[in-house]
Length: 381
Image (cartoon, rainbow, N blue to C red; front, side, top):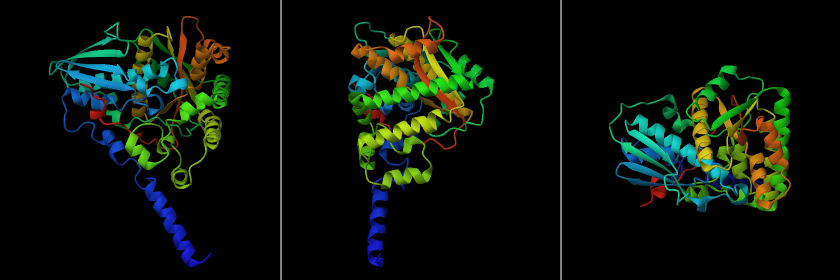
């Protein structure tokens, strides 16, 4: 190849690398909330919302709105940000809202606010998820390790160290984080046989989602393929958030966009060969009633606590929602409850229902931040 052609090719690759944000990971307006979450309005209700919007949530859809008034903050579900047939019964949405609520309460304690929580305070408006009454300066500041971990917590979708087992105390300590939430529990799966069974079901549920064109399309709609789209929408799933090795992440950004079918094959392979294959342990969030929104919100509170606690211990975590997503789809379509029956079996007790499976372990690649909308975009009059 002539030197001129090589130079043109090199310039083209360099331009695409710049245009796709290869050299700007974690930068720009879409990532500012992670960097400025404690700045500007500390000890004010707006600061509590700054912490809340950094919570875990489904497909990074950020399905929340906040209303601030003297002495309280109200949390509302933004159902316009539902992820469609992936979450037809709003199960994942309410888990994510519980995560945001937990961050908000942690921030309230850290800023010395006395606070009182009421879930679903208005029976006639189910989108009104919670009201947190606040009393400024009425309590000593309580800056817990969980609060300090808020800007560092990210979902890690990469490979875990399969050879490094988790100490049994990890599971006991995580379980204890929910002692004030009697309707929520956790079941752990650490034996080789149980992990193999869960892995097989997760892969099968992934295949079922891919075969369901509506579910597959609704899921793909939340992937942000370009740097410009990330900065404009400030939500959704990104290449950076996949916890890929650096060279692979850069290549995924520079190469031409791939088709949905190719993306599905990559997702299935990653689920089977990376996420399931390297998990030293799985867990399941259990609730008394998986259809009850209060149970769902409280499970989100526990998930956020566990994830923040895990961050302080160098442990990575990732929801594996494929089985419940198929269960909800089965229910909405009125078809055979293949995965619904599997989840009943995995619950291990007829008094509990599985709300969300997940994996945990020690990471081999650091997780990076996801984009976030600003506080101004989610506070409503």
